[in-house]
Structure formats: C-alpha cells, structure tokens
Length: 563
Image (cartoon, rainbow, N blue to C red; front, side, top):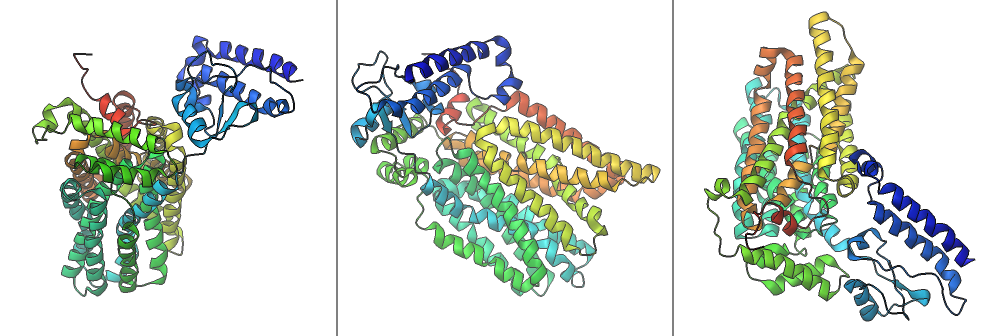
C-alpha cells in the first residue's frame, strides 16, 4: 500500500515541479498567487506524502520508501515542528546542522525517523512588544483628543486659538524626534520609551486642570513632545528586539495601537467631559512605566555599549525556548556587524556623503513625505463633513476610527506574508483612486451642483481603509529597520521631524490650497502625490521582509573590493 501511494504521488510532484519551472510560471503575477518557488512546492508536497504514509510503516520491520533530505535553502518552508531523517542509513547529502542539533540535544527521535522539533517560543518578544505599544496607545489618544474636547472649548477659545489647540501637538512632535534620537543613543531604547511617558503625564495633568488657553497650549505641546519621542523610540525598540520573521508583524502593531488610542478617546469622549477625559488618559503612561520594567533592553544597543553578557541574557529572554547555541549565533551575527562600525564616529556631513547612510535616509524621508502628502489628515477632516447628515455627531468619528483599527489589523496579519513593497503598492493604488474619486465628487457638487453622496462616502472609507493597510504603518516600520546601527538614532530623528513637519504644514495650509484650487483640485493633487509614492516604492524601496537588520544593512554597503 505504501509503495503504491509513493509511486503515485512522487511522479505527480515531479510533473508539478517541471510545470512550474517553465519561464511563464516565474512571472510576478503568478508568483503572487503561488508565492513558493517550484522546487519548494515539490519538497513541501513530497514531505507531506512521506509524513502521511510514514505512521503505517511503524508496524513493519522497515520502511522502504525514500527518505527526504532537506537542503538548507528549503528548510524555512518545511513545517518547523517536524524534520525527517533516516536513523540507520548514512545520508547522501549533509543534513542540516540545526536538525542534527535537535536530535542530539533534545533526544526526541521518533519511530520511522521522524523527529519532533519544538516550535520557537514567540511569547516573550510579543509580550515585550505589547507593553512597548502602550506608548503609541498614548500617541493615538493625543491625536484624537482634540475632536471630542473642542466642542466644550468653543466658548473659551477663539477660532484661531482652536486651530492652534488642534495643531500644536505637531510642533511638539517635531521637537520630540531629535530629543528621542539623542536619548536612544545615550540612555538606550528601553529607557527612552519609558521616558516619553513623562511629557505625556505632565501634559495630561495640565489639560485636566487648565482654565485658560496658555495651560491648554502647554498641555498640548507637552503631549505632542511625548508623541514625537514615542514615534521614534518605540519602532526602533520593537525592530531591535524582534526576530526577523516576526519583525513586520510586531512592528505594525505600533500603528494598530495608535488607531486603538484614537478609537478609545472618541468612545470615552462621549461619556466624559474634558477634565475627566484628561485624567483617564493620564493612567495609560503611568501604567506603561511599571509594565515596561521587567522587559529587556535592546540586545543590539547593549552590544554597541560592550555589554555582551547582558545582550546574551536579553536575547535569551526574548527568544524563549531557543537553544543557547542559537542565541550565541544570533548574538555573534549582531556583534560582527557592530564591531565593523565601532571606530566609525558619525558626523552630520556623513549623513549626506556616506551612501550606506544616505540611501536609506533618502528612502525613509521620501516615505514620510509621501505618507503626509497623501492628505490623510484632511481626508479624515472631510469625512466628518460628509457624515454630517447623521443626527449624532459622534457616529462619523467612531466609524472612521473603527475602519482604521480593522484595516490596520489586516496589515498586522499580512506584513510578514505579503511584504512591505506589495502592501505599499496595493494600498497606494487604492488610495490614489479613492482620492481622485473624492475629487470627482466635489467637482460635480461645486461646479455642476450634482451631489453624489455615495461616491464621497465610498471614496473616504476606501481611502482610510487602504491607507491603514499600507501607508500608515510601513513608513514607521521601514524607518526602524533600514538604518545602520550607528546612524539609527540620528537618522530616525531626522525622519521623524520631517514627518511631523509635513503633517503640520499640510494641515495648516489646506485652507489656502482649497481656496486656490478648490476642494476637488486639492484631492487630485493628493492623488498625484500618492501616484508618485507608488513609483518611488517600485523603483527605490528594497524588500526587507524576512531579513535580519544586519542583512538589510549589508544591502546598502558598497561591494567589498577584496571580495
């Protein structure tokens, strides 16, 4: 029976391998449908064949079907919890070192040559990431705070003062980026994430007790400062503690918690007035400081300061059940890259002259500019006007925030499966089309008095949904993973400052742009900027999915003349 099954299945898999090896099967569109290489499909299917018929051989004295020997380049596409080996015969090709390691160290050999391999324990790095994401939760609360509190302040503030009340957080965030950039290099990533809760706490205290616009301005500036520090330090910390196959998923949790914060403050704003809402918001940074205490510092930062033993302990905490040898190997890989840069002091001139730093810096800056030049803040502002037909004013805000949360969660699921480039391109195409559609709706309304409410509604929801999938989380993720170790703090602070500067300018100047080219012209301009962003991603952004930070750094290094 076993022999018959093997004789039937193996020719089929060989035929599939031959079919998918043809040139037409290698085209990108087909690879999206079937993302595995042809030879990987063959090995994967053959593996399952042997595994399914293998147990039936346990009752026999021997198994006569051929044993599959997995070569290293294919190991990642075979289920981690199983490795197939032949215990009696000598292998014809070298077995994987880490597969042999599991046999010798764990002693989990099974009948029929099947060895159980324990799954990596992801819980510690996920836990550390979730705790660190309490900082972007505060960031989202700050971003959404003005919406439920401004109606209460209309009798206290003039229209100009209300405008500054809403936009001062951007000015604070511009200053927060450089502050966090210096702090991450001096006191460490973990400490900087914790320190950013200080301006948050003081700002919420001022907002809770403010009776005049000066205290309100100071509270908004300080919470904006914490927001800017958080937007730099948290992505870097998450990127440096994450394993390469989890970095995209964990890194995109940053934006997911931002959207959670916006939704939470909108919902609480229905129940609480400004003072009690400020007091409630102040509990988040306080809780985050205590929750962060048991989490480890970034191993890469510890290695850069010469604390190797502390780095190994931090890495062992983060990797859970990973063997000591694997932890040492990962630590040695980080250390080798850091040692190359140990005697290279970074100067501001080098940011422009050194291609290893200049290229990733330009990529990160362009992504930040395109993110804000999409007009996301103004699209969200216009969504409130579009939904003004609802009797309850809170409904449109909650709907928009819910869409952001839902589709950012989609990005979390697909970030390490689809990759950064693909998500940015798909999201860019959809946001570009929806921005053009929104412009068409306003053009017909303003020029021909034809109201297409359904087109406006659909365009806004599609824009926000796909922006949340790609252009909201990925620029922050790329910023955290694309810079070399010695330039990560300074370069990230520049990228963060550019992002918040663009946010401030585009939001403040929207009224002037609208008066110059009308609402429809403004949205068509935003659509054009998104189209340019798509072209930039296609031609200049390298894929970082599944690569270690050291591999990404090597990508931008000039070729070694001695190699």
